[in-house]
Image 1 (spheres, protein in one colour):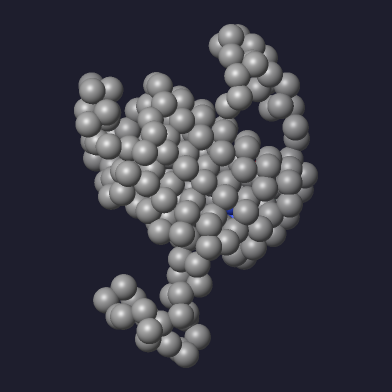
Image 2 (cartoon, helix red, strand yellow):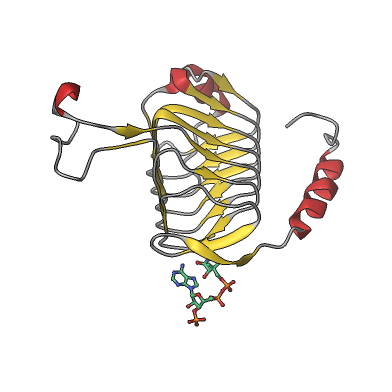
Length: 192
Ligand SMILES: CC(C)(COP(=O)(O)OP(=O)(O)OC[C@H]1O[C@@H](n2cnc3c(N)ncnc32)[C@H](O)[C@@H]1OP(=O)(O)O)[C@@H](O)C(=O)NCCC(=O)NCCS
């Protein structure tokens, strides 16, 4: 037994675009389907929240209990993934005390920090991590569990911690595996 929507049901949701082999749990919350683009071979698990302008590429997994708050844009590029309980914010209130906060307050009393969050190719974010607005998680970055990513990362590094810092370089063997895998799928020449 699984809890995924059927293809027919997904086509009724009204996504901006919808690729093939997309598995989305019926227990996920989808708030803005007209602003959500989904590529091929994507799985989104139970209790994840999809909100705002989301661009989700190919071969992507969003595990259970993730929150994608994308009013100002979130992009997950090919072969990226979120472990369970990862939260991505494209906007945050001002915590300094200079302004009022929270969504029930009119915007003239607040100062929102906002900007698109991008996870480039081959990035993976460990369980319960948080990514703040305007961050670019650059190609090949991995983020350890329970990290706070408040600055954009360098390519092909392993990060962890609060705030996230570089632990070491990340190996690039997966790039060879990507080629072999895509060849085996017969779509190496397709732009994914
Ligand atoms: C960051 C990570 C990738 C590092 O793994 P690793 O390369 O095997 O490194 P190590 O386990 O040797 O850790 C190196 C040091 O960092 C510490 N450390 C590792 N991950 C940490 C984390 N997320 N937060 C705080 N400290 C961490 C280790 O305790 C160790 O410290 P020490 O040298 O004082 O003993 C891994 O610990 C991690 O967090 N993976 C994410 C796993 C996950 O979320 N999986 C969900 C399902 S996919």
